[in-house]
Image (cartoon, rainbow, N blue to C red; front, side):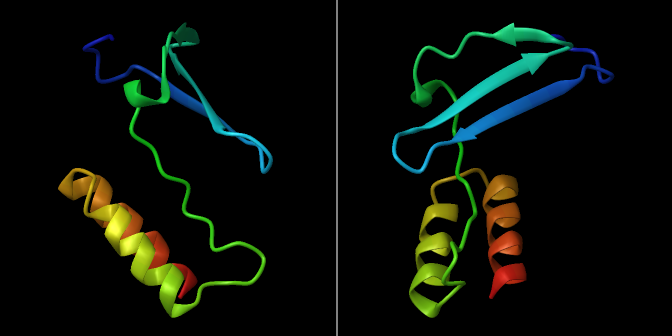
Length: 83
């Protein structure tokens, strides 16, 4: 991956409700091969049609604990914005 601070990172997420979530990563317009979803840590913060209940919020906070401190904080902040 480029070390340039001006590199453009693009992430395309295919959230298929009937299959796995697909991730496509591009750096400066060039596809970066991801061989498995284990190559890329991700989580989609989505309370669903029914909204954010206490159980969902609790589960999102548990998910956040498995990420880096910065990513976990972002997940918690997004979760709180739905709660």
